[in-house]
Image (tube, rainbow over all chains, first blue to last red; front, side, top):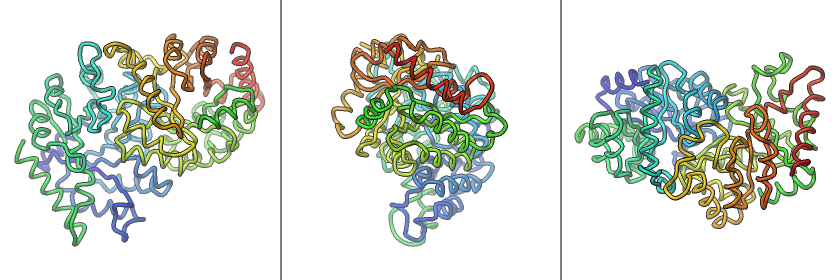
Length: 262
Length: 262
């Protein structure tokens, strides 16, 4: 995962990850029942600009079998040199995580999955046994609820820092696999996390969620690599006119905006 | 969820939840490629003994589209007065959790979903906006990795107790929805959790994982209700002979074993 990510970042001069959260309620009537066709437009319009795509499993599961078929086929549309992060927030006891890993890597063909750390090492390690694949572990998320548990002192340091330190250790123990962290752009603590780890970051929360792009890019890329994800802001851009043109413009603006401040 | 659960427990005089973790590598050759047919045998053999069924999403996702179809159809085979818990460990920012809730409740027809607390209140609350539905929130899980984060002191009490207390508050705030907790039978702390909450428990970890049944049943049901889940131990029983007969015998033994010590 790490080698593929770095090569894609370099090739496209881009830290932009495009989130594929297909939502019929936000989609023009013409494509409302065609997630695959809509995603094809998004991917065609952005494939030289996005170093990674992040399909969000929930949005396809909510559409039933048809949605899941579209997810499977969408992943096949993504260029083979681009990182595919299945955003699924999985994690369970070992024998079950192994099945989630199989689904994400073998069945769907993703390169990485987002996973929850709550159940600890043996819930994450099955994902690390697939050579070339990897995970982004939830560390400090972009939502309000991040304060409920992630920001508790446990007892010497915050839970999100405990997670970051454990991930350092797991990365050492699994040199063949890739481990990154999810850090919300809405969180001022991104510098504190970067202070304890050089693992790659996946940073959602710019755009619709209101995170500060400049801080996220600068602090996240100081001694490490931080992918910046945007979903709604790219795939459902404001304005009128040809949708492919507007999606490309939104992606280009964000990619270049990231490069300007990094 | 709570009313349905209580009625099912009373009707069947049972606290037994049967986990539907279909695994081709454990299934007799005859049914290895027929998850739906195998689950039909399990459900037919146990439907008067199980107060709840818990299909584990991972095992179906790992089989691709065919597995997901079998999951959808399996849920339709479960008697309408029996609680259906989709074991999926979901949880994400609000707009995404809403999609997971839609998938579990509207598309699949589950009554409850297991969710991870890591992302906090707004990652759980979308599941609580479906009247009559509910969640079992991971509190103290049955696996070794439970010690990595769940047993950290945060800072006054353990993280798993923080989760239990937050769930009490969320349950009060959503009286129409059901909230329960997942507590592994392998954990001695089940009494400590019962000491701070009357919410229903879903207790995995007896059987293959080696949890102590008597402690789990006694402590879990002291001032609350504790469902005891078994998956592999019921659906893949040891021995030879007719599989339906052996599955029924394993379920009957566990249901009665639970009733004897409760």
